[in-house]
Amino acid sequence: MTTISPTSNVALEILRRTATEAEEKTGSADSANSILKAANGVSAEPGRATTQAQGAINNSMLELKARADAFVGKALELVNSDRFRSSDPNVKATLKAILNEQGEAFAGRVEAELLNNPGLLHEEAIAMALTATVRSNRSRFAESEIVLGYDLKIGPDQLHHVADANGHSTGQFLADAREEARIGLDIAQKARANAKGDAALAEALKAEEEAERIYQRTQQSANEWDGYWTKKFGWREPQ
Image (cartoon, rainbow, N blue to C red; front, side, top):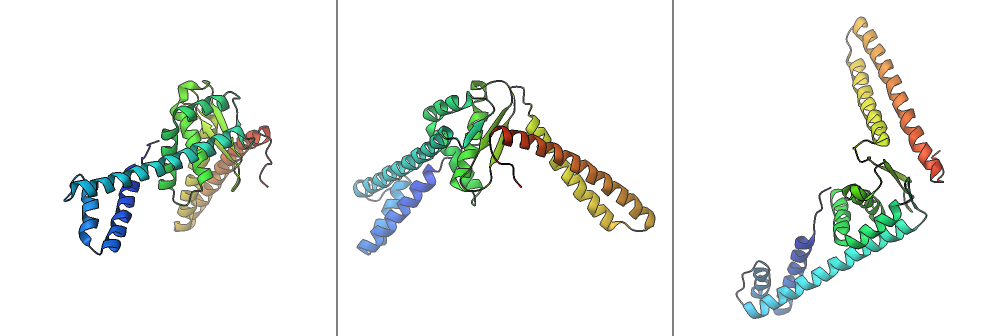
């Protein structure tokens, strides 16, 4: 997963707010322009404008650090709780160590999830970032496939699959097969709807029935796999 750092955007936004406040306070656009020029390394008033810009940047960095610390704190709280489950009991200790070592990188993953998915809840973003952290530090975990479970406060439970050391994942394979079967069923249904003539319609209906059977089989297999881990983690299966 690509880590996206929001530092420059946040700092610039704070500088813009500082510039606006300065303009309103003095009634002069020069003050605002000076601050923004200082942010870009160019200042008509090096002393005052540069100091203001540096102060704004320092404040933005403090805000970002506080936000990052909050994300790491919430992640540690989740990992330490009964709402986090793993197929490998050693994952919890290793993951906590990584969070303490790579706090800024983890916070960057959370920020990236929130940026790419505007409607995502913070807890969902933290769960996704935790799974991404395991994947990006794969060599520090057992070689077998890892199943991670998140019992979120808001929303349904989530199961995340981390492939084994050779890149194989039963859970992901079953999920991919189900998705491919669903796409195949959609195509068959559209072909049946567009069929012209009795012969073509009969052939399309036959293809749709076969696509439906394949989809039902793959869906059942994926559901059974998820149901196994849901039960193993002690969660209630969805009705």
